[in-house]
Amino acid sequence: MKKLMYLFILIGFVACNSGAQKNTEAAQPEQIIEATIDIGGLHCDACVASVEKGVNSLSGIESVKVTLADSTAIVTYNASTVSIDEIEKSIEKRGYTIKAVN
Image (cartoon, rainbow, N blue to C red; front, side, top):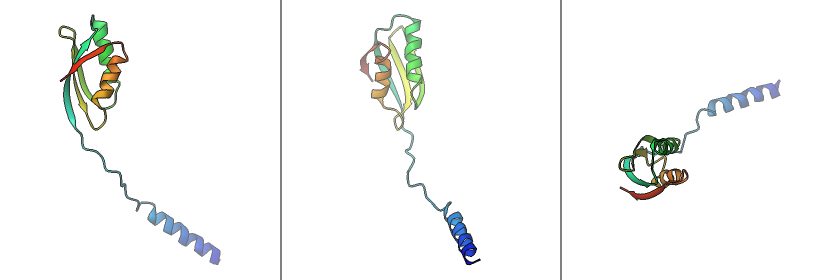
């Protein structure tokens, strides 16, 4: 009987403390940035679609608009989630070059 009482006390203690843990990891605030990327090697609408698909596959991308006429991509992204380097690498991975980032 004494063992049973200790078991109930232990279960009660564990149950009471299970919700007491605090999340010490602070969420990073969003840092929304818009960048214009000059891209080399865009020749057709399929190129535009490829770049947009590659950039959109990254986490933290708010929007991407690639324009064939001036070979640019306007990318709006959350800098606390994705870096401009990761965006550039996703474009280069598809066979295009980065001329400049503004």
